Image 1 (cartoon, rainbow, N blue to C red):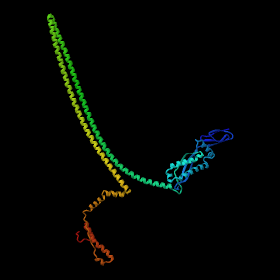
Image 2 (spheres, rainbow, N blue to C red):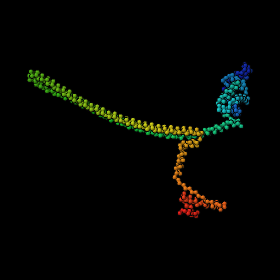
Image 3 (cartoon, rainbow, N blue to C red):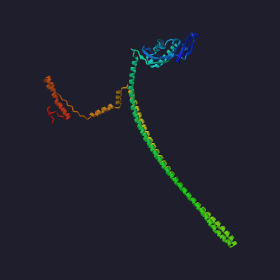
Image 4 (tube, helix red, strand yellow):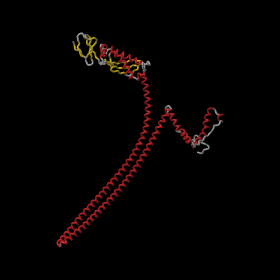
Length: 476
């Protein structure tokens, strides 16, 4: 017995004693009477150039690269591969011709049912259909297409379909590029005008916002000044009221102290008198005691009256000062409210003026933009109706704008007032009858000079040179 082990990308194919068909394993004991073959299951790249013909009888070459190997996830497919393919080398011509025959057959059948345009534009769908049909044929060999890469179609020598198609596409791209350049130039000019309009709008908007902010700042400053002044006046009035309250309290305390002093003085005097009366006589003592009590009651009543009077006077003075302070505070509050209302009114007027100016500028800019867009759309429509003839468009616009009438009017005004002099003269016929052919031409030239020089003099005021001749009726 022998112990056999396969590599990571290999399998053992075992046949012989005890095995009815074929056994696949990664490792196994090999008994006498059994045969073990090791085969590789890694995929292999096959490169082909398939010659096919489209439905229009146009031949082409389809370069393709297929990565093909056994289906290792399915044991039935792997058994088929071990029986049919593994006995041969994967890179041998036998396997390559087998795979190539399947791919060429399916590719040619599919290409014959499609036009050249369909094959060229639908490369992805063409590749998918070729992949599916070839895979169906390879299933019977236990093979799997891991990857299929269809390259760019190539012309067959003598049939330059793709070359001509590329030249056509190149010319179309060049013409489209010219159209795109003209369109981009038009958009650039329109965009520049739009940017100028937006710049003007933004400048007007910023100026209006600046004015609004300045007005707000001025109003805030005035409000803050009024608030500070009001707080100062309130603080001043509050301190004056507190001072008046302190003065009234002090006056009240002084009155109490004066009353106590007077009572003490009166009691001391009456005590002396009472002591004297007691010493004089018992009877007079009673009388004096009665008089003393009477006098004490009178003095107490008087002191109470004076105390009440002074308290009332102090309260009246405090009340007058409080009312005066309240009147002053109310007057200043009303003045502050009036100033605030005036500032708010000014701010609202400035804000409305700024908004009105901004709205007018915005509408003016929108009108200019709409007019430019309408004129551009009108010119584009005319140009399309005229078949792209810029000369016809120019002539139409000149006629529509009365430019030819204007040019004619300007030319008429330019020649208006001119007074050209026209002189009709003749050489006569007397000399023509007697002159021969040679002297006839010379005589004609000399007979033309006098009227010609006269005409030049009348038109320009210039005289001929003296060596040429003089005019008889003109004084130099």
